[in-house]
Length: 518
Image (cartoon, rainbow, N blue to C red):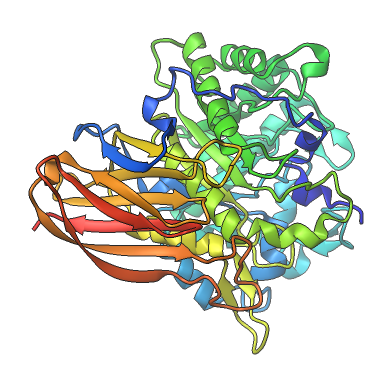
């Protein structure tokens, strides 16, 4: 079948890469050593220090809100509402970021998205649908964000329209007008924009802008936005692979040239990371390495400034996506237990890197397409969560604000190309009286794991273990609502004189273990 460009714009270009091509497949010294899982014959989780490596804020969790998919699957244009159950599930992520318009807005005029929905123009927004009205515009989006207690993020068009590229000065003026419009919405009680993301993937695909052009155009738009929102903060996309390698520009060269051109006016960065489904999604180890390389690039250009990175899109890619024209049969693989394992793995890895401020899952929709966060009930209407949703949910429910340096040791019984079965992390609160352990086990075997938290030596502790697990890694919730539900049990843990105890990580599992000092 013909691929839908809007849906796949984030990663389709990567499918043309040779599967052996990597960018920074190893972890460099720009990232903490704990990001690299240690190879071992046994599984272990070790807290290296009670001195926090970083703090996690509510905006660490986020969602890429692809407005076309969202409007078609979750938005009722008659009631101007999202299903109440969906709102409830999203409220479990207070402070989460919702990235609008999900990365597809390089050719749309925001003024076609405002005003009375009934009188908005009917347009061909995407080439895989007949023309339709945009009923989920900025006003509806901000109201939705407010309703779910979230934070707003706007990807602004700095490119042009459906006919092609327009003058940068014209696009900058439009960006300023949008900023002015949204400023009035703030006065009406709607959320402010946490970050403005300047364009979407203009370095790749059919646009292939050079870094100097992207920097210059971005700064023009940023200046106009600041005219109406002086406190505005901006983000620009760096490269996680080398889409311009054919003209001799590596990802690192692109990133450094872009950072040099942006200067201090646009001083935060984005990355898009898709993983675990070759050839378009490389093993997570490679993508984490790309984060570390991009951080190193930013530090090289501005050694006296601490970089800030946002993973504004991330998701598991099903194997042979894009290269197989009939890969629709594998769409379910983007929302199964294996996808949830990859997503949780990425969250844990990103949380261990202080420069990463947030990671936004692709994508917030409930349609019969790749990467659904929710599924339609088979009977009786309504929606229910995917396995990927529950993976994020059990982690968010157990999140504490401080990340402790945590070394993970793991075998590789699963033969995962990333080289490990287990990735883990330990969190604590400000008083170090509560702890949480996040863990993934990619293996088909239950793994007895040594857990060492020196601060808990000689203590007996009651812990709550919430996990997702199934004997089939391809299990999903599409047809059977609760095929892979959260399972909760209570553990009685005894820590020895070294602060060590034992926990079992079930096969094919995402775990969140919460405990408190007695």
